[in-house]
Length: 222
Image (tube, rainbow, N blue to C red; front, side, top):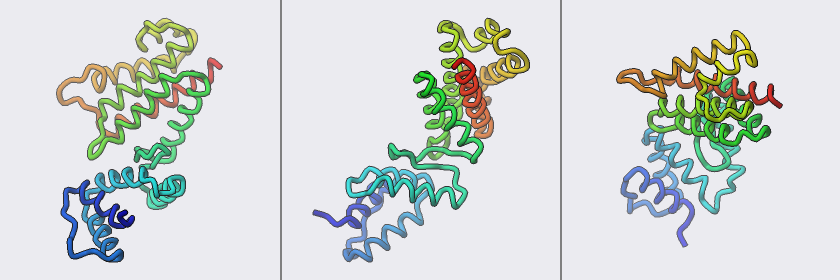
């Protein structure tokens, strides 16, 4: 049975398409070789390796997740390792809290499809090496649309039509804010035009907006 350092080096070399140094066989040398490979790797490959390590049977996963996230947080890195072993985009503290609150609220109120769509938006922001901003926008607005439909049992309406049908329920200026965001995402996610892909900042804004509003509507209908 291979030693743990050997197995980790094998995984790392396979990921990076590197050949292990045949002259390194002692545990210390294997560990140093692996460390050098990680230091030279592109950042997103390091995250890929973290995900691979998190799935190893000899890793104490809960502790590993805690240690990785402590490092990320201490060093201001806007990513986190979740309990499923995925390294996901976290953003700043405010963004993270908004999304976490929305997840918890939507699940508590039974809006499971909305919760899944919001999770997919975060997964798209977490694509490496470049985020899928279009996908993040689409999933974020789909999440908000699902909550809106659920709370009024109007499952055939688009979000834009839902606002028109429920203007008295939500009132100004929230109705206009939703319509404005719906119009914005028409060109930056739902009906994408050439050269109009959302920037990372735009996508994060829309995901945060959809999460916050989805949580608000869920709580309002509770």
